[in-house]
Length: 402
Image (cartoon, rainbow, N blue to C red; front, side):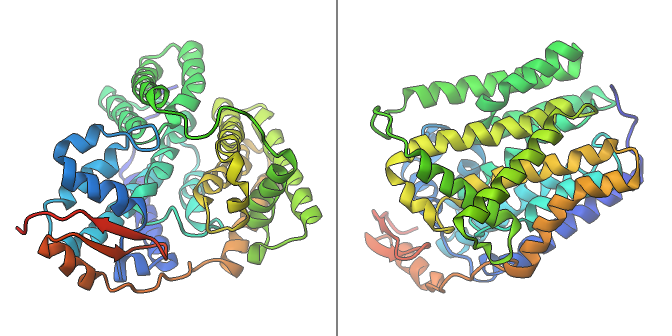
């Protein structure tokens, strides 16, 4: 189904949504722009390898796959004064996130209220703040472009279809998620047999093949023996998805957290299988977090205790929360009455209220005085400097001064 050409008012609403997204990101994590500092892989991987490898770093996998957008930004940062690089990284991450989310405000998504809700909801969910304004975690926002493509109807012009396919190509080389979502795009292409769905499928297949080649070429990061603690895994899921999504303060007794998780999953399953528009997208939104979290728990099966802290690995649970919250929103588009629409919107509304009540502004980082650390890098001599999260450090290998 092809959407009509977008009236100018939709662009006005999209720009308004972009401004609101940027404002929320700044309000929740202002320290990332006011006192910008490197965070973990920002410097340990992207900054360091951009300096040492130059343009060749673009084809250097990390975690077993390619990270196109962070590598491009890091390549630009390698040409700048080190004092400016953390701000570049964090601001670029904010721009990528804003563009990805604002793209959902479109007549191709559905009613204006639906598009605005889908765009703003990910910025308001409870979270540790790890994915926001952070170059390393840009891939979690570009992953949402895959779901946006599944949710939307086909564009009115060939140029718009090609542009959307290119955007999926960039997202596919920035993270591994096209591998998991390939079946959904294959199903859409087979069912609709349109030029647009075929273009999307080609983009997803091509980038998934590239990422899968790197993933299969990477050495195993954990022992091949499978010893997954099912009880510990269930407790983690109940806490990180049930309690952290729905309760202010993100704390609950294990039994309550498990009950909340079961309620959340029941609502998600009901929303996914419900007849109506965007059903393929809804099924993908249910299957993706289930498969992804299963892979995460298996990969980190020897380190499950780390997930007991909300500061560790929250990126994996944030995107799962986004998927489940979007599942609660999408059926509202096909609701016959206002009361039915309100019922579908109740769950994401609770999640937003939880974020606003107890977990809106993220805990600021300790100011490690990055300008002083940058001066040490500028000298070009090997040096160890502190970075975020504390007490991590980066051993600068040294380079000739500019």
